[in-house]
Length: 256
Image (tube, rainbow, N blue to C red; front, top):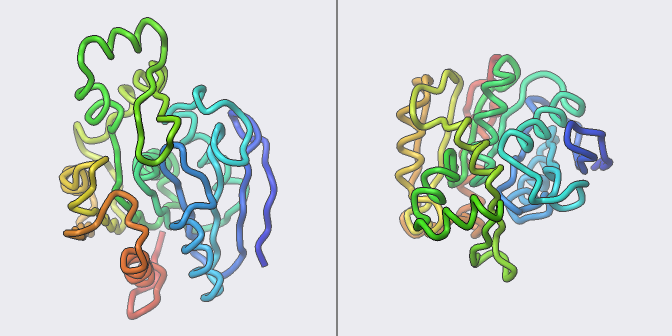
């Protein structure tokens, strides 16, 4: 049976949904401006429910059903939300599944609580996107507007109102860049990325694989896959990727 509620987090009330079941817990970390009712989160909920697996999803503050203003959020703040929810609502080992920005958040969580994080699964993971995909792309006029006004709004195929990016987001991201050196996570890592991804280049997953200390890193490229990787075939691939990490389909149970 699914439970739901809110906890008082470091940045305000965080809405969550979970199913108790066989560990390790599968924890879904959503992308920028997304929420826990999206297709991948909903698929994982149903997939875990069918197998009696423990599963947790939630909304970062400023997202979905959680409290707070979206514009007040940063990578650090949303990672703190994730750590609070995981600490309060799970026990034992966790497998983090991070989509897009959630792929950056999963690294922050793993580095802060590596003793509980058994494995990572990235779906179009986007670490360092604030620097490499936003700041590096913006012209001087856009950068100047961001610094003067504290925010810029860009068109997005995922939101007709566009996406807001703040100077606080850029500055905080700059303090948390992970693709400039080694990432001391040694557990299994699986990275899925579409080569038709127009938002995050698939080469980002290759860069991430190089930075990770783990020797057990696999990158799967989907030639016709887009950024969302939410088609039935993509979701089936996600399930096939996740199952062995949970000790199913011939996989060995994870040890933390």
